[in-house]
Amino acid sequence: MTDAIAYPKPNLLTKEDLIAFEEEIANLFNLAKIRAPIHLYYGNEEQIIKIFQKIRPQDWVFCSWRSHYQCLLKGVPREQLRQEILDGRSISLCFPEYRIFSSAIVGGVLPISVGTAMSIKMRGEQSKVYCFMGEMTAETGIAYESIKYSRNHKLPIHFIVEDNEKSVCTDTREVWNQPRLSFEEFENQEDEYITYYRYETKYPHAGAGIRVEF
Ligand SMILES: Cc1ncc(C[n+]2csc(CCOP(=O)(O)OP(=O)(O)O)c2C)c(N)n1
Picture 1: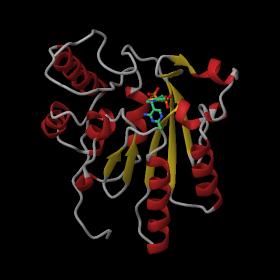
Picture 2: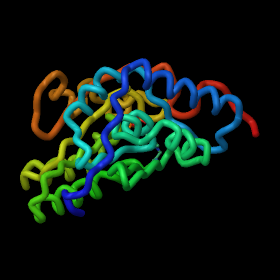
Picture 3: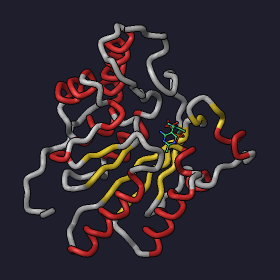
């Protein structure tokens, strides 16, 4: 892990580009061309583009099962990403050469992100870690521990909580009988460690809205 490498430049993509990519994938899925789960984004384009304005090529990005937007914005070429998705790897996209990794295990990337940030700090490198999670993931113990540890140890990491109000098909606030979620206080706040935003998607948790049979 050295900072001397010339990293690929991130893609400069618009909201329309991101939406068009997901629509293309949705179409391919509904045509039964992708024989594996997909999780699509919609409605958070402005927020995520703004976050990526800060993310540099040497920075590390960690995501969940829903990561097409992050991959595109980190610089993964559209065709390469499309092929990985067609090959059935949408839920665990990893492109080490672009410093972006994901896992379909709830909370799976959180300790790995913290470990990466610890390594950056110990080696005195100039990169930073960005770790994305949904609002349900943010309610789990591992999220609290990861965020608490990172803040208290002043690690070079930033967590992004993306609130679509759902845990798969269930209302997250109803699950916990908690009208206000734990990291909601960070909405519209500048914080060194947490960004929290809400969005309303047009897609279901997984798939693209119609039942596909192979
Ligand atoms: C350890 C583990 N438990 C359960 C699941 C099943 N699962 C997949 S996504 C999800 C809900 C996640 O909700 P949230 O964190 O809000 O993310 P969103 O998909 O809404 O962005 C669950 C329970 C899983 N993938 N991993």
